[in-house]
Image 1 (cartoon, rainbow, N blue to C red):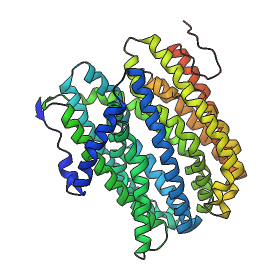
Image 2: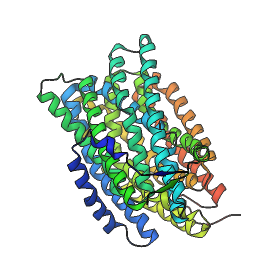
Image 3: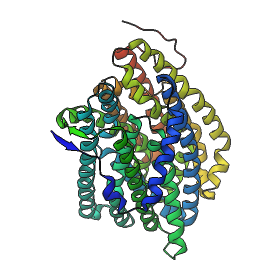
Image 4: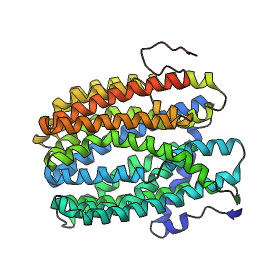
Length: 469
């Protein structure tokens, strides 16, 4: 055992205007202190409300920024940028190898049991592991793109290689989000990724265009790289500073093998879920040209107004699921049922709103983007079906059923990819929409059934709550 002091901010401070970053820390501390001081259920509810609010603002920011991006660089270059950026976000998330979620399970347990050496160990080890793993993956990815350039369209090679430079910071940002969620620091968890980064991407892009850079995908990727590094390093300073104040200096214990064994199935769950969420965009990119990618992505981005309800509730309840699984099955069941209502009804309202306003929203991207409006009527069924069962995968993962959850997602992902392969060549964007909607409906049914079989909890909005032996 060795003494440890959380000093990762030292390196980050060399790269940032540290006065601004450090001044934000006490402000966010005061806001979180006001928001998270009541009982346990209230804490989860407030975190979901904060997450919900952030995702509303984020959806508006993302929509405006993507409209401007499409207008600035045109649908073809925008399609290239979209495919590269979505791929980087997916791979960056996967590069955490599940640690960004497993820390949400371990940190509350160690804190409640007073296991400070283990708490220090997982905070330090997870950050080092994610940084090293993501850097290696980025290097291997760049090598793979270079070696496989003969099989890629020429306009994708350089943008993909450039995009890999921001992969380690995307992964670190996801881990820092997990560390913040484990402590119910809603603003530290969500605002960097969902508020700060998209605003900075837009700001850097506007600056580069004003300086005379070409309005193309490469410029957009350079702006994204700069924004990602500034955001993640600022978040690292904030989270590290706050950790130093709540965890006293002392010995550290590292049980990397145990953490990795738990993280690996979670990694599979998160991988399948993330791939499932974005497989349609990747498959469209594989079969169709960048213009089609742009239209489809703009349509999906419009649907994000419905998706964010699900993700906001998921962000707020995962930590509480983890705490209730320790000998409180009745409270877990009641709370889980409540989260289904939190997810479904706001999602339904947002779905109707999107269908009503979808066409004028897509016109903002450009006249050619309205081709995606009819797809919304099909895609919305899958989104609402997912919302109707609540955050089942978080409940399974936090209750120790991550293995079977991973199996469900593996089946769903295979089902989704199979449908895409069969339908996209014949029906184009309609094929992708059909595959995605059917896959989400299958996912919702399979996860709800699995929760009922494993935990005896009915996670379905219109099905009466009951427990079966």
